[in-house]
Length: 312
Image (cartoon, rainbow, N blue to C red; front, side, top):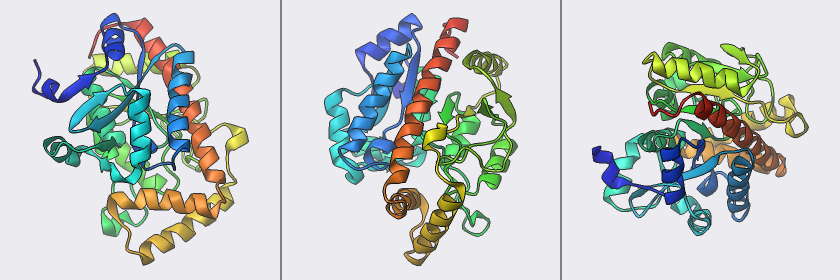
């Protein structure tokens, strides 16, 4: 028995799926508590789970409830988390010992979701966008813990690229230094969350889910620890105008600096401000890109399960 198992609760459905080698996709919970208002957050979370099921995989939403690491939430638990909102502790790697020991409710970020998914033996994770190097990090050193987790934890992350509030160029440099492959799904350019283009190239363009699964299998069988960023552009019809979103983000960053909003509070503030300044259009884009990522993650998980059923 691994020591972490005494803190871990895996739902019977997920446990059975993992034992059988059935495809499973991990989902974070910060998007429920901090990413959207109630009830859109709960509706979105349940729809994401439905999309994953429709595409042949089992969804495993991850959170911390009363100090327990939960893999696979019930509808009531998702609703509870959605209503709890910002009162749930935004939980990254550094926070886990305290959320557990104090028996608190925590919403998992990309980093902590990867950790808990890895504990459970889940290798594919769908989210909106990864964290990264924040603008001005050359003086603030504000770099998301997501990037170090991607360097060390064997979970692949399907996302719409890096959030466009970040310094995307420096984020890619950081990932390259740490040996994390960044691949574009049917694109050779990294998407920037709300928009399909960023002006930055990916390491590899991949054209189908099987190609991704084969690369993941080879990576982990070679003992090359760490994840992979699978960048999936937002659907064309929901992509926002690049000039508009750049202008909105610049204004939001100025306001954040004036209010001295830093660290883990900066991303929720900036996303809320972008929603306000775009009159809610960014929220719809956010929801649709998450749906798109959930579908692709399920397809990759199916291909990986078909290649082998061993746990790495």
